[in-house]
Image (cartoon, rainbow, N blue to C red; front, side):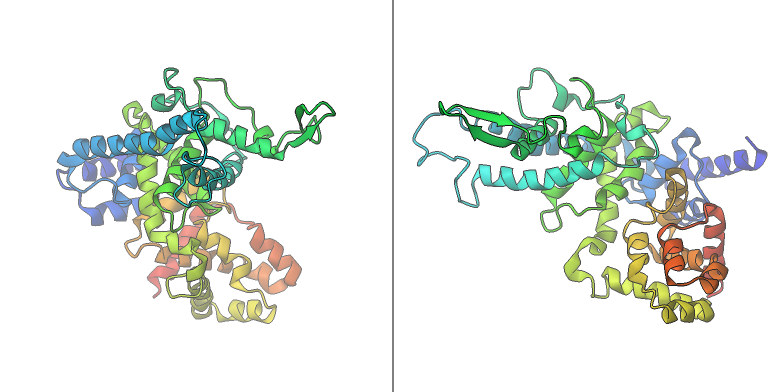
Length: 400
């Protein structure tokens, strides 16, 4: 470890040991990258995302309160419905007086259950392929949720719900004697979402299953937006960072802490995921146009070239902005970029400058390329040195 790196760690420790954290100092330090040693990044992100207050003395009580609240969400939204599902249909009383699967009433528990399953299947499909370049999300967590995996609890877990719901893809046939046979159209194949990764044995949970639970609870608590594809790419780096915290006491609560940090982050960027707001001033279309207006201001020649080729920001900047660049770089580089984004006091204005710097840094290739070549460059960004990109973005910021 270099003396410069040791000095940066000491600077962070000095700021974080104050009874009241000076947010401006923490932002200034974090903007240039947060060391991962000693759980510094985990702690700084929790402060920068407004999960932890600036007063150190209240951290213990707030964490305990929030983690208990998350346990309550688990009980109300996964365990109790799971028990209810196990009990539903057991009674043989007249279905006209009982809730049943064909009940058209919007308040029916079955109706809610089936609607939730639609959301759950989309989440399941997305989280299973999270960060495929690393094996982390397929590995077992050291801290499986005991509330969920307690063998004394006989209820339907999310894993069972997904497995049972995918039975719909099977065909139902009656033989001549009236016996119903369940058979898959192709015996050797199972739904890809179930076949993609081997499910761990009972008593174990993969990290992607934890992420699935976080997203499912978020969707239940936020019915206005529920779950939109891409949210998995936002929660992934947060969970990875907290679940690899060297502080085992905090790592144990990575699920709850990720949930609340993700909720706070989504409160700031959720408009990007709401289609009806796309063309409003807070929507994604406005932000994409802002990338081009900034580029026009900083490099008019490159801006005109992209306009001439009719390369619209929707073709590449939609993904860059909506997913906070999580799909453009490897996970460690995404985390480094997020240090700077979370430290931005104007909340993601810096992201527009990062996108702009990404364009300017490949200006020569873009000026020489044709439409097809340039689209390929923008869809599969060639520069991997994120420090160079962030440095260029800072130069653009300072030149205002």
